[in-house]
Amino acid sequence: MGSLRRRLISIPAVCFTGIALVVLLPVWVPLAVLADLVRLRWRLPTVRLLAFGLGWAWLETAGVTVAAGLWLIRRSGDRERHYRLQHWWAANLMRVLCRTTGIRVEASGIEALSSGPVVMLCRHASLVDSLVSAWVVTSLAHKRPRYVLKRELLADPCLDVVGNRLPNHFLDRSVVDSAPELAALAALSADMGPGDVAVIFPEGTRSTPAKRARALARIAERNPERAATLAGLHHLLPPRSAGSAALISGAPNADLVIAWHTGFDGLDTFGGILRHLTKRPAVVHFVARRISRDTVPTGEAFTPWLDQRWLESDAAVNLLLNPH
Figure 1 (tube, rainbow, N blue to C red):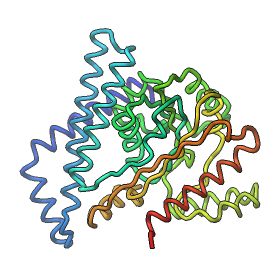
Figure 2: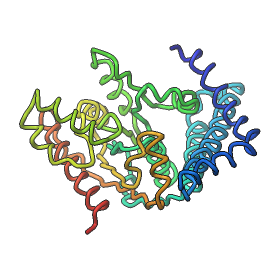
Figure 3: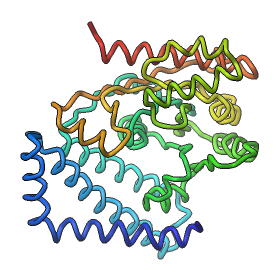
Figure 4: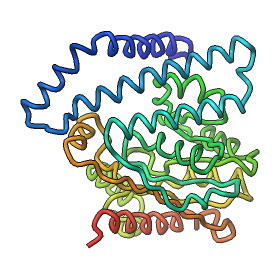
């Protein structure tokens, strides 16, 4: 689907959703409350999810409106203004998420992002991972992120319009020949400055037990020794090293940051979000750890090195989830 056709569908749909949720507020609120109470969901998860949807729709509408205004005044190529818009969008969407769900985010290791450029490899466990990492990078570390994201996320109007005006890359995961995609990742990080952070999710998709089992089975067919090593993973998926290696290769002077979080586990579907919202809100812990570039191997040694870092992250996640 071409970008114009996609936007002609996604932007009106989001605007209509925001208007409809406001106009029908007197209808959907009592109905959602009733639906939750009938199911004995005392924390009203349906109401909370719809309230977040309302905030998201209006923030999306505001974001694309500002982006359209920048285009009208011939500032569509002004990166600084678009980074400020991204910062505003991520900060306010995170605020809406926290207020509607009751979660609280505690971030540690932000100093790992203090001096750039850096390449950040993030755990991927939920639908909100890109938002949380964007909030950490822009609001807490005050840096400019460059994202590697799947092309399907272009269905989000702000990610589509603003994301394509900033240095990001939306991966086409259906391609047979991955060489052009890997070259694009190397180019993405090639001109990073001190304030830039390239972000990638090496797992490639949200982690679930079923996906982890399938990934390990596929690895075992090609490399039984690697599969045996990664069988110790309990929370993370085996990392796909090619994309990370390409991104790192484009920025030979950049240190690495490994980032993981807990508290969003299970938020990989809307059903999972509803189940999560029925429980007492957990504290979300976001942790970042910096690794000096001169300790990072290249070539064939990179994959086993990344596997070990991922096993360490998995153990850290397990410790946070099971402190006793």
